[in-house]
Image (cartoon, rainbow, N blue to C red; front, side):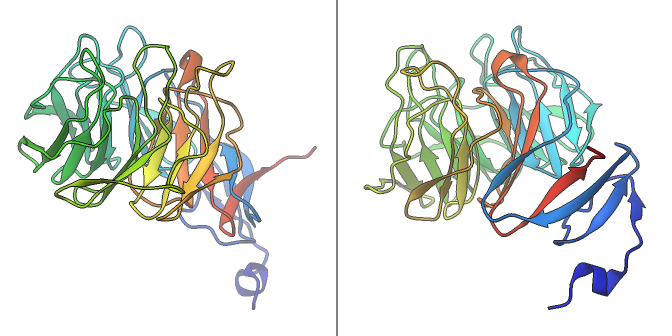
Length: 328
């Protein structure tokens, strides 16, 4: 097989943003960050350090993917700040109309939904069009700590916390939410992945710091939830973790494990039937933001514990991993 060098020569291209889909052996100079970068093949999944957020935030929400992400809300008191990410740099854009934390976020960088959240417990939903946020149809059940998946025209929001954990499930058609079949297990601060008609729910737990996080996984087919049997349990029970992917290819990372000494760095991959551990985050964190959709070969983690501004990007085994070259 020909190498990148044999096909493209040795000239180094100067670009303002990293290539969206670099190939192994490709090298470029990022003029925004003023660094030399390249893509190397990974033998195992790996997390790499990404750009620094402008506003540190815990219990934040997100949408998009690691090359085109959106972060919104979070923090205490609850923030309205929204930022977009181009794979290397975060840029501030127009704020949410209502400050909130621990809401459900999903969609893409240019078409996202933010539903519910705190403080106080909200039913308010806002839609982002790539430029600004607009209030749209409310949730039927006001709640925080729910999970959202899908798009701005076909979404699903499930689980969460009112005065207790709930199993409530609502379907979004671009205009309004309708209640559909509940989950089998009530859970808050849960992980999830997928679409309006093919979703996963996993992990989660009590809202208060009393332990008892959940291992189990459920699958949604557009009309009903099915509790999946072992080995579908995650290896680590946690809540307030980051998650993204599809019903057959998902990833979960970080989270709180109250029996332990603090936020966790674990990362697990779902292949449609079982969870497997892979390389940890570089730093443990909970209440972090993550992307939406995609699969388990690519993910982004931002914000989280102690209102960090840190970003990490995950690349799955065998995929090109972007690295920064230094003179050390």
